Image (cartoon, rainbow, N blue to C red; front, side, top):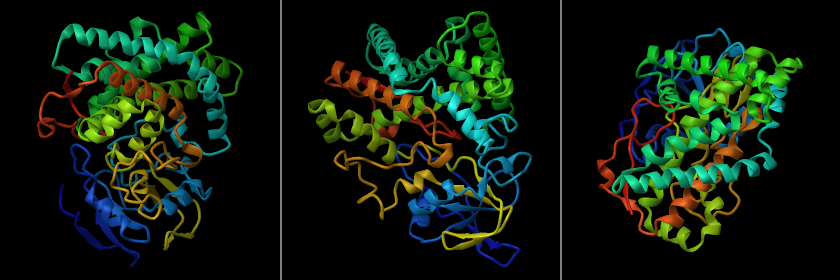
Length: 411
């Protein structure tokens, strides 16, 4: 834990004081005390992040985050070409053709295309292959012998394999992809390396889409090329969509699933309950998604297109507004005892996958992957345990999605 970020002088317009939020690294499941403090307030706060220029408003309470992420007066498209205070030195997604920088109706068009590959039926078709991949990876881990690193043997390769299968990416294009995705999603530590890694991934996606046009198939790359050829989306949009899905699918699920297993291994009563009641795993996955502080800081902001009042403050046209899904998931007005891991909450309206028009298109896939990993680990290894004390583990520094570097286990 670190101390409360310093408060800078009041904003030049004479309004709110500015909180300098340094976005320090946190390990294990530690929650950012800055966000805890914001949850104690019933209004938005002014913040200044490590990169970019100016200040932004931060929404933390569940109701405020929900309102800001669904209000059409806040725009992602208006971000293009602007330098605003940010947690990253550069944009990860393409600003000109990316889903994250689009507003309806253009956003709706892109999501409609991608949704064709993310239906419930599509996930059910993908599940047997994903299960076979998990089994194969764990077979190899057993041959390696214990102790073994779950990040190396499961959490790293499994999400990459599943998202690559979804895309229809040939095996010879997958080499090094997990490493590139991780570097791309750690921009603060090495901006040039992150940019170079993104360029490598995009080049591979261009090659993949060309391959799919020459060899049509019913997979996500086939959906994207068909939509591009039909004029539903542009070719740059197809490339950007495939790149974003590959990078986030390989990196976010890798870290989130490793965090889930760490949480269970350090909450033995929850682990024992899931072993005894495996039918609770889908519900447990949702509670783990709510509980785990997987993200470092916040994602992309939105720009106010007109003056408005929200979250107890007056926001001017042109102001940047961030929404913390992490904080919203710990709002005590919505979740009783929010800092407690509770598998009996029932249906959970968490925001781990975002909210509103930019809700994660791959949420169904991410849930399926997490369920498979937990189900398989618990069924195969009744004595699964950390091979080192929890305090000996280290977490990836400066990553946009927090996760352990390694997760050594025995069984």
